[in-house]
Image (cartoon, rainbow, N blue to C red):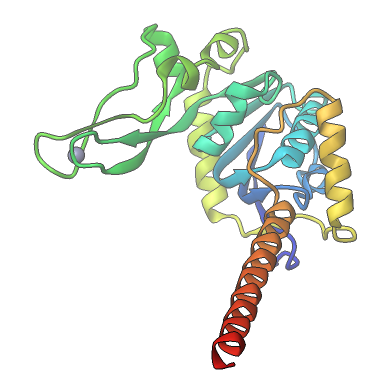
Length: 260
Ligand SMILES: [Zn+2]
């Protein structure tokens, strides 16, 4: 089932005896439909595993909705596991204190960069392994070219800041096997689009939502909303047209005066 045109977040759901798995793909913004997903997850089980690898972007409204949604899920699922978290998610985990509150983060993705040849890549790291080793250092990855090496393209103390909270969260002993089973089930599952979106959020609604977010004390560090960006583009086009028209007017005045 495909989502509506506005729906930009798709979901897949899988089940085991003691767990439910959910994979989110797309953009978490004002059209996220997360609320409607809770019911689609089926009867509550001991563990909810959420695969976030497909999340490309999350904006400030998305962050607010996510925090509220996760808080609700914690009332239903004793253990919540987030895995394969992409940089867009990790930036929020490290910025917004309660973004992953009470959840176990296992694998996460980190941006890498090679100083020598400029190659950019994204590597998967295991938070629990790194936490157990006690070393908060990004491992080096080989580059495509010989004698090159990729290094973390972010400050280690910032990108791994979430380790502090992660150490306090209880986790199931068989976590590795659970994540592996969830991956298999999700790969086999069909895409299940979240519920249809209510009336389109107008620019006014969006601004109101962001104002409420600011009032709630949540950072608005997420990317500029598409609406705000479109408004900015309209301003640029307007100025460009004005400049061109003034140029034509100036040329006409010049021609008229020189012809006489
Ligand atoms: Zn290189």
